[in-house]
Image (cartoon, rainbow, N blue to C red; front, side, top):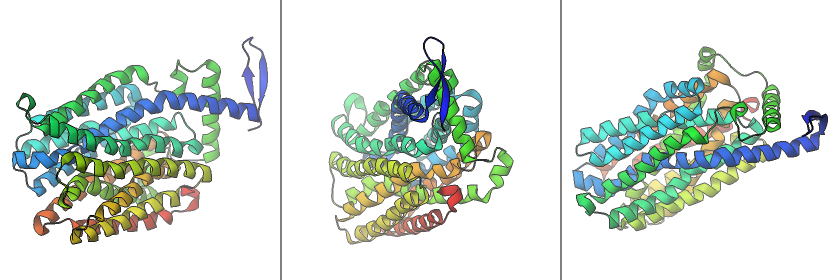
Length: 445
């Protein structure tokens, strides 16, 4: 990039130097970031609160409703079956109808499903509502990944994905203490149990955010009235240059889905989600079994792991962009999670409270790998193929979210602890890390 035409306030055509253009683009991207990312961050945070709050409500809900560990594990995991069936259609809907309408519909749907959880009384009801919650949320994360490629070039995506991905970790920082306080202090209010209040209080904001999305978001840069005409033009030109520099990427859905690299990414993501789900849905139970009984204390201990995850995610994303490297920034995070899970399983078996330290290592390792991971498929697919390919990776990969909680529940009912399940998860994470770091440089560098 050497220079670019620009128009001053008097309508005269001039030329921007490369330095001036870069300075203007930096300011534009900051403006785009401040407009889109905080809102999407809050929506994604609420999605995670509504998805994983069952891990904390379990501490009261299981005893209240007489659920076994297996019932809980199956119900927690069924979220991802609903996710699987509706992921690709939802993401294609975003491509066709735009982000505003799609994200609005998704957030309102999962908020209502979260509220419905407070009325569950039987295992069947638990299974049905968790499935519906997954079906409603399906498409949000891959849709946002696709949506942000309309606004940011590949050289800026890792940092942006990392900032947004921090919502996952931040939800864990706040969900534990919030759920703990609600369950401790609102139990019995209005004749509702504390766990019922958690679902109600955390479901309502999602509905409101879904309504707000219609006014806050713009589908594409050329539709953004909050950018000036020159800003829209410079942004569009920069994005077009980035697409040209990246080179030819797959546009056909059929050919993209036949690409073995897509299926390799599916397996890697499956391994990541197995580890993430095993820890997120069972961390409160693991901490309780180590001798901590107060729900607020348990929430605080788990929130520390997520706080470390926030820091690790941001630093990993920024460093990945700075080094223009993806494979090892993703793979080493997965490997850290795998080693942490293996050590966690051993310490849980021994009943050692040092297991908490292992949790604080394993979960951040997994969390910081996820935003960087999404740079891999973005380098080989674009357009409608990206909508289908990213959704396919996310939907099939997220089946690990069904397998892990269910496996943990079955193993715990059978053995009294979750060690064997954690070791199996650790093995998958190590395999996924090795495959990630062995990806060809031309698609993952």
